[in-house]
Length: 260
Length: 289
Image (cartoon, rainbow over all chains, first blue to last red; front, side):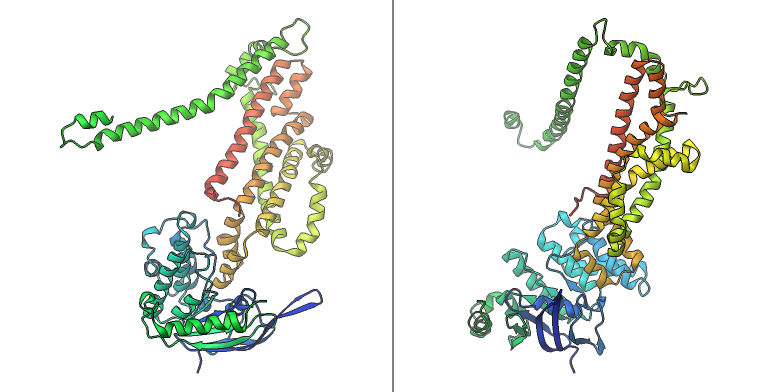
């Protein structure tokens, strides 16, 4: 029994009397606590899949079922970490998380519990030192940490990550990947991540969903990554199994489904 | 300073010497800043005053030189708060009367302008319906509204308020609408994921995101209202700095007119800076995205 299932998903964008099919017959079942990456070339519609799961876009055909309920429109049970962090610049780090917590748990938590919950989530991403800083006063990596804390604080059933580390430098990216792995190990979140970084996909995922090129993109192949956790990037660098997975994704992207 | 440190015994803390010198450096720097900022305008003012004095010193000069302006208006300058009853009151009272009108008319324009701006920023239908009308109406000069509002209100006071209102409202509407149209999709997505309702969205996302634009409109609006009130008061009479100028012209007191112009300029400048300051405090200097 899958926790999140995407069934027969089609998506076409209509402009005037021209319809262009972006996604065709996407089927995917995700178990609770699983980490799924979707990888594919730019423009293959991987972000469209995530936006449909988030409810920010409606599917043309098919649908998404989360925990037995059909997804209709956006909601906090599918919180999202955006590529460009989307923090509100007029609010401090603390207030950015507070907006979400106050909206969602106004009734179920008292003031003190809410404050503890906000601080707890910011501590999870090591941002306790900057609670009163404004987004423009902290680095890109820190902004993304706050974005992750805000998403986690919503207690989502599934956490959606839209190229969360794409705008970061390589060192910061590695650091944040490790932290996301640690958070997922501790909290057991179901996560779905869009990426175009092969190493990131192999390191973080339980399964890698590889998409064919558009138009009418669909799932080309799903790769099971059976590397034991916790995973250590340095140990894995020389690991033949790791390199085998890496090779499999690279060959899918660059041999069988290369961009012309 | 280095030499000083070397001469001291090893046990003394050199840090204690650095502290006051840093404060002194700060003082020196802010002092230098003030000099840099104040000297050029004062020099230019002096030069312009001298040129003016030379140009208007001749016996057949049409306008008085600055020395004569100060001499003739000295009583007005030293006692802005006298009140001899009727229209014969000090310049401070005249300015206050004008400012009061601007305050009322402008505040009404702020409320209505932000409201209408939100409406046409949010609704495509309202945008299509109202925008062409606004684009035409905003080009009507403020004074052209005056006869119509006198006819409508049958009284000079509400007519003056209406002229302020109708002058200030257009830039406020247009800038608010642009600000709301430019709210990044990211912020809208955040609001959607959180399922913010209309009021929560307005309060947490829309107003702060559009604030830099709104304040641009408010700043243009306050400048225009100050322009309009002077002109309107020249026509409707009664009290106010605009009326004072017209009255002075009728009595051929050219020096009074010049003094009033100085006051109007200074007040207009202060109004502009005041709105800019409030905007700066509220948006905390976050630029429009």
